[in-house]
Image (cartoon, rainbow, N blue to C red; front, side, top):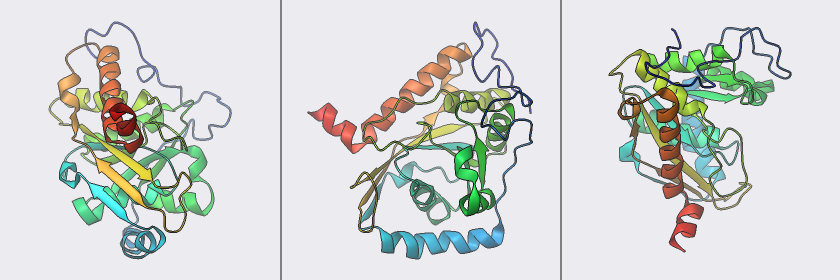
Length: 256
């Protein structure tokens, strides 16, 4: 798989010049290593029903999901949820995984979340690491390869967990990654689905209510009509606006 430049592109971008896999960035232990992801069949059969039928219903209060009709059941898709808690890693599969779409999800997660028992589980349930400050070429390539294989990929576009209610500025990588996959295989049909996850308490605890809102997919191919830098900026802006329209705090602010 090759990161191909877009014809007519006037300026290079961060994804066009990914960090050298052998460069020495402090704290990025995944530079220079091949990135892969896999799903353990036995663990998935155990973990997903356990989470959706017992853990989430018994820990949280009301879990309300709207917009399930916007979830693609096939094809290359990037699910782009807001990130307010580590519980998001269970809420997203509950919302868009086997229970509703019949699909196993792949996750691009921060390298810090790949440690210990949590990392052991994440690696066997489709997760792979990325250093959000210095993303390696290997991480980005693997994300693109997954889309080219028409997998469902989860990327938290804000980058990290934020307790603040308002939508944070999105990282540029999600738009560029999706565009590269579409440009590598014209007609692939990559889409990005915005997902707002809102907890009734900033730090979720037993009995906290969860409000999940799923927006209409953004079709990436429609943005491939201008230089990559320009269409990536437009796609990121449209995704950020879509998340703001979904998120309760943003809706209240706009309505007020």
